[in-house]
Image (cartoon, rainbow, N blue to C red; front, top):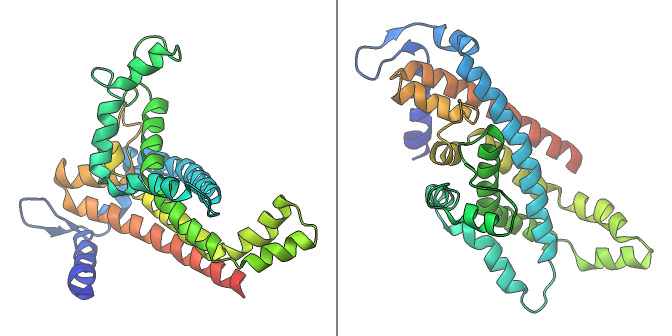
Length: 272
């Protein structure tokens, strides 16, 4: 099954990246044009820069919010089960459906967000949240991803928090450690595996971002929110050049492999 659904498609993409492969027509070998053409593609360069910027912003914000929620619901007390469920509930909504939901909420024509913000005096008139400016378009996508994925990452971090023996915290309190010292010297080191997992998921998911930008912003305004995966989609299904799309896909896969190898190496080194 692994060979059928992973190895075979991977080999096919690699083979396609060596050819000029139109959607309709006979493929012809053009090695290494699909790879050298990546550097000459201005849209690819802008998409790489935007994807890296989005990855940094999204990873930092998502980790801070998810960790904060995990700390908030760490201890058992009345009502904590409700909040754990409420924080995780957005994860049950499909990502495309969530993107369409935010598109409707943020619409400058039918969405209620502009009316609510105008009513409380936070904005003057209507703001086009998804296409008015690069900053508002990026902010809309970031807000969507935070709402959708914060609870899922909270659950992973919460599992790591609850795996720490209470006796360790008790010993730290007896030794007079402050809350910050306890967090920095006990909580963070003992949660290294959980933190590495969520960071890997966050970075990988951000580098492969597509749905939120395709549905919310369509890559605009002026391609300012065009991610690398959107470029791959356009190369394959708009320009109908599957070979070029495969070449960009292989390059992106190589970046993800290098990142994950470095991440696993750092994790193993620190665990010894």
